[in-house]
Length: 172
Image (cartoon, rainbow, N blue to C red; front, side, top):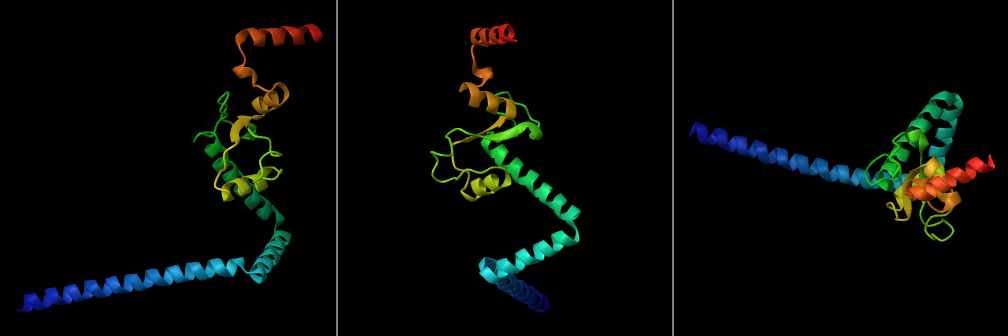
């Protein structure tokens, strides 16, 4: 009889804990929804901006360090996505993040969703738009060559590359 009472008490405790966990989850969801609504209010955004400015004035080195860390984080995320899951140039496979940039396969003037701009602002916009197509990760050399010659020299035939090399040698 004692064993039955103990097992019933155990079952009761487990059910009570499950109910408590459900209540906690519901409260978390409500708080998450409320916080999202609160952050989107104009007065909340204004207050956050004011606090950010005060903190920046108080300690600009710390703020700059944080901004740089955020910039590198979002740059890695975007360039990895457009580099087919790799943080490397899709043409020559250079992996140094300092050399990598985003290439607009479709010029931005023709792309109606994304307006011209660059850097962190562009990276944030691409992430917000759920990474639209029309971009690729290239190194600065490949991107400049593509811009100047309409095709990266890595994709030229070996004869074309030799002709270009000889032409530049004769001019120099």
